[in-house]
Image 1 (cartoon, rainbow, N blue to C red):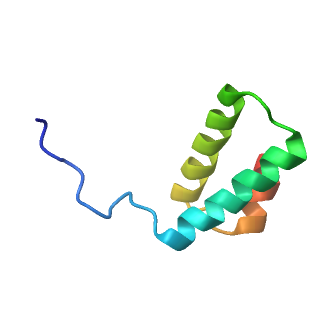
Image 2: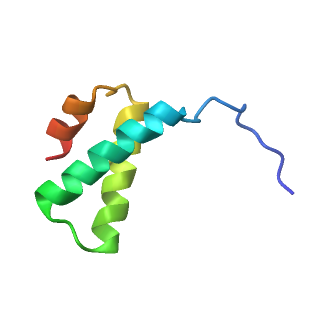
Length: 66
């Protein structure tokens, strides 16, 4: 087994953060009418990356991704 190199909590999202990202995801999926799994996965990845890079405002995330 490979030892865990990243300290716990360094990249973990809190429940409230996950809920915010989920709301953004749901909003963008509906607004852009995204239907394919590939597009959904790409969107989810972009939301998490943006959040981890400091875009923590829900409206700002939505504007960034629409």
